[in-house]
Structure formats: C-alpha cells, structure tokens
Amino acid sequence: MTMKELQYFVTLIQSKSFTKASEQLFVTQPTISKALKSLESAYGQALIYRNGRELGLTDAGEIVFQYAQSILFQQQELEVRLNDLKQLKSGKITLGIPPMVGHLYTHLIQEFSLQYPDIEVSIVESGSRKLERAVLDGKIDISITMLTEPDPRFNTWAIGCYPIFAVLPKTQQWKNKQQLDIVELKDLPFYLYNPEFIISEVITQMCLEHGFTPKIGVRSSQWDFLAAMVKSGTGVSFMPEPICKRLNSDDYCFIPIKQNIRWELAAIWSKEHYVSKASEAMLGVIRCAGN
Image (cartoon, rainbow, N blue to C red):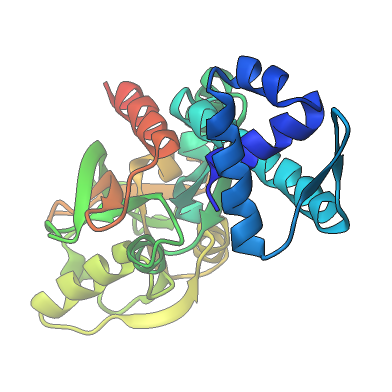
C-alpha cells in the first residue's frame, strides 16, 4: 500500500468513474486499475463492485475508504505544518533563563513574539548548571548562562559582560569604600545563590584561591531575597551590575572587587541536537539585541 494508491482509490470512489478519476489524476485508466488491484491484493478482499456502469463499495471497501480519507488528510496537514514551520508560521521553542536575569530579557521575548506571533515560547527558570544539562538532554533549545570557560559541547553567542559587586549594608564601615579585596570579607557570612548558579561557583573558587573557605550564611535562587538578607543583617552578597541597579542605593553599598570578577552572559545551544527554524529565529533576535 502506498499513499499514491490510496489517493487513486479515494478519487475513484468520489468520482464514481474510472474515466473521471483518470482525468482528475492525469493518469491512464489502467494505472488506476493496477492501483486498485494492488490494494485488494494487500487486504485480501474486494473493495468495489460494479452495478452496470456504477461503482459501489464492499463492506471492506467502506472501511478502507474511510481510513484512506483520514490518512490522506493527515498527510496533507503534515505537509502544511512542515511548510508553515519553514516559513516560521508555527512552532515552539523552549528558552532557559536563570531567575536573576529574567528581567533583562523581557524585551527580547516581546520582540520575538512581535516578529513571530504564532511561535510558542516556553520559559524555564533555573540555575545555569541545571539549564546546561537540560540543553544537552534536548529539553531546552537555547539557554542564557554565565560563561566561565569554553565548553566544546555547546555553540555559544556572547551577549553581555558586567562587573560583579560586593553588596553590603550601608553602614559606616562600608559606605566610603572604593574597592574591596575579597580577603577583607572572609569573616562575614556569605549570602550566595544556590550551588547550581555559576556565579556561586566563581565566588567560592575565588575565596579558596585566596586562602579561605567562605562561611555560607544562606543560599537562595532569588536575588531579591539575598538583597533583603544583606539589608537586615551583617553579611555580604555578590551581584552583577544589572541587579545592583534594581536595588535602592540608599540601603546598600555596591563595592567593586579588586579581583575584578566579571559576569559574562551568553546564549548556548547544543552541538549535538538539530537546530529548529524557531530556534534559528530566536538566535537571530538575540544577536540583534546584543548589537
């Protein structure tokens, strides 16, 4: 059984004539007869009967006719959907974004939705390490992440680089500080992001390289919670410049770190997985936004 044989059979029944069917299909009558015999041979039953010049369906023919119509319709719908996808008229994409950067990319999602209104965008929020694993597993198409060093498993597109500041309560001890060495903070409680956030890895590694293990006061995935802990306590947190700009400078000191920690953001996608047209479109918007 082939799709062409089903098409010939359906057209024959709908036109009720070999002559009309051959005209509609632009094939000879023997070609249609051959397709009909092939189907009857495949199913082991007669599909039509003749009553004079008229054609009728046997019981088996009725069943095959119904299913053949459904199959042909689904094939047509599949072709339309695939063609639409090529033209970016439909589709979906899953984008991973760490919670701390979501507000930076609201405009990007809005711009994408304006350009491609029929493509569904799903946002997954988590720490960078979890998002990276999800990209490799094919659960996420593209993720925004903090770059530390090149990873051969990913394609990357750099989209921003920002300084990371020590965030401290606005007290006499800190308010006139122009710069801090990370070692000056070793006796304070550290309010850090959860371990799956790369920024926490970077801060912890820097402390270890300078001879001390940070004393973790609290961990969270929410930057506003960490900021509230700083404001009400005596600890320190570390936040990139875009986050600091969202905090009230009357309540906090944002002090550059001597070791010059940078927050490098990039879009990543797997080298092993197929890049859909929708993903290509999203990457195009990301690249334009970064220019």
